[in-house]
Image 1 (cartoon, rainbow, N blue to C red):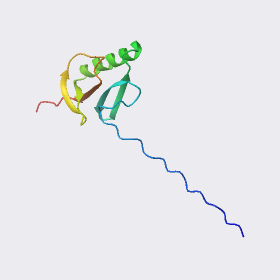
Image 2 (image 1 turned 90 degrees about the vertical axis):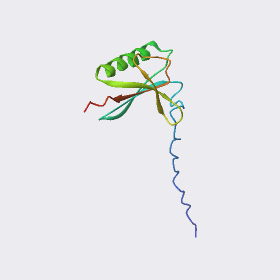
Image 3 (image 1 turned 30 degrees about the horizontal axis):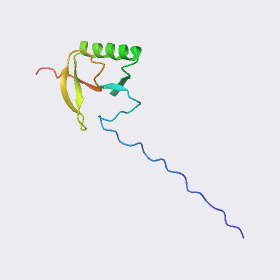
Image 4 (image 1 turned 60 degrees about the vertical axis):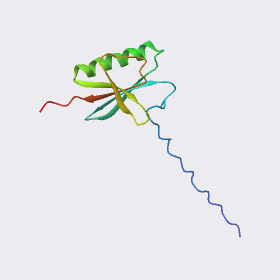
Length: 102
């Protein structure tokens, strides 16, 4: 009598958790927009003029919509310096909706 060998299915390991200081994709910088749709990321390489222009235009559009931009600092992703102009050298930028006075 022959026994059949049953292979266990391979279990994919979850991707490692990245901190905001770690680069998610090959040297790309990103800006994150937190709004009612969730968290959207716009990524760019500072050596790619087209990507920088998309990020710059997105930055301007979000500022016009009343969002505040902050450079992200530290491994916890703490908001750092507030930004009024796009800086293609900033590694991480986060946008948050400015609270309405009330």
